[in-house]
Image 1 (cartoon, one colour):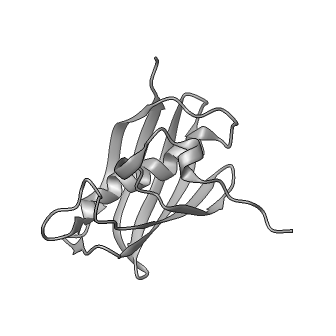
Image 2: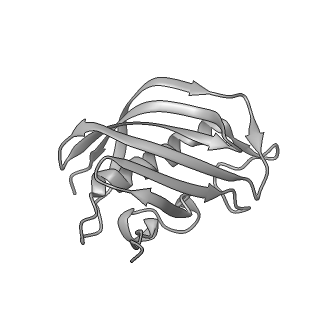
Image 3: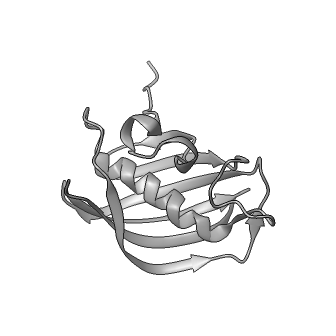
Length: 138
């Protein structure tokens, strides 16, 4: 029987155009794979297209899925508190481009996570980084 994968909207606090992840394609306790297709309402989209550095937000959302841990409660807001080993291609992508996001949990707790990952377009890595993300107190 196929495993039902979560909808990012059910686990991330982002709404509307700010929810960049389109769908999760694989998820376990330590890894997430997701896709995002560039939409015309994307807030990072400029006249020249979606910048590869937008991968920072894509990776943060994917890591947020790991931080949520599949819990039933909608997660509280979280923030990127550190970025290390960031690499970014000098490219921009048009509306309709599909990006694939790969994230891996390196460690953490229920309140914060260290996550590493990359964003690919057509099999080519266009962004990679190691992020620390933390849930925010209300």
